[in-house]
Length: 171
Image 1 (tube, rainbow, N blue to C red):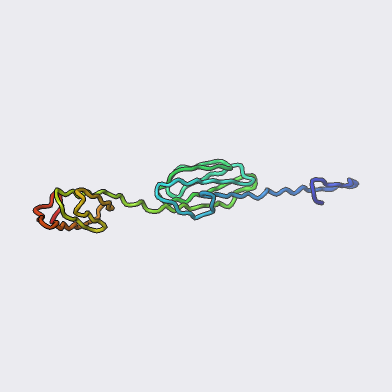
Image 2 (image 1 turned 180 degrees about the vertical axis):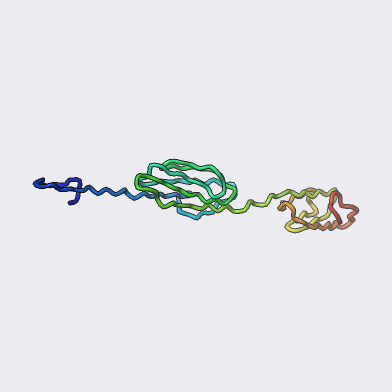
């Protein structure tokens, strides 16, 4: 028979059997609403959300660190500075669901920029990579990634000569 009812006429010794099967389990994890993989900027936030069907215990683990989150459903928002894979594992009366994973790729950090200020006490131009300080300006600023080597050239205005640079590494 099928359904929840089994009708029998008991007119002899007989055995009837009720066959039960566990309901299949499922686990689903997402990063920012996507099955992934996704890519975010270094230090940006990501929301990891997960849900399960017919599970009574789920755990989210990380590829690069100890610790975990638990719950049959949930979400966590946090900032990432390294690529991380999140894996959801669930169990229930029917055993274990196939684990589901999502990877969040993190871009390398942007280089730290430093400001280079060129000051002049008189008329003349100073030029360099991506830098132009015209004769009329006594102070100019440029921005450079940390560790960038750069050479600057001073060109005196008519009637002036360059007598010295100050605070250069060499030159």
